[in-house]
Image 1 (cartoon, chains in turn green, brown):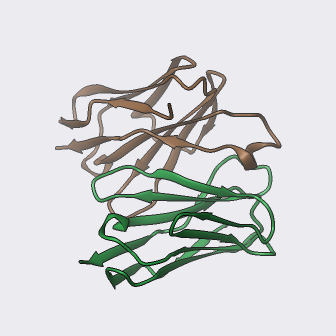
Image 2: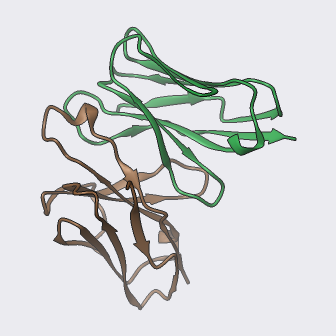
Length: 111
Length: 118
């Protein structure tokens, strides 16, 4: 079946260090979406990428969508304690409205 | 306003109880979703309503019964649940521009109902 692999599963960083999480899909995606879920919270939409090779920035966060539309990354520069949470990627494949989710990367930031 | 509200926030129920989860959005979205999320896992799609009609049922057991009274409201009726049904139940909504344009449709999640089945 269609899968999205996400690595790493966990990441522990010191405040100020950079962080990157990667998603790889077994199938071409029509889009990739990124969500952040704080501990005890719910998924909060961060961004959506649609075009091949697209790069978007939100302050310290940089999102990329691969040329083949099968992989994506989220990079956080100079992490802060407020970045703590689980980051999920999710995408649609073809004309299927159901999102295929990665398993998430849990980020812990030591102050 | 990108707010989806859900009630109750927490629910504890026995296996013989009947209860309902409620979800509301006022963003004019025409698609609404129920997800189930276990700890440290991604959300798992249960149902999708599009323009108040059930569009997707991901082979969910009949002890979960969804209802969409109107385009702003979504309910999930629970009956004879099992302890393994304990989870965070998330509602989401999206604009639903239509088939072929779902690659630009964004889902906004509510805060969830944390359900414990004893």
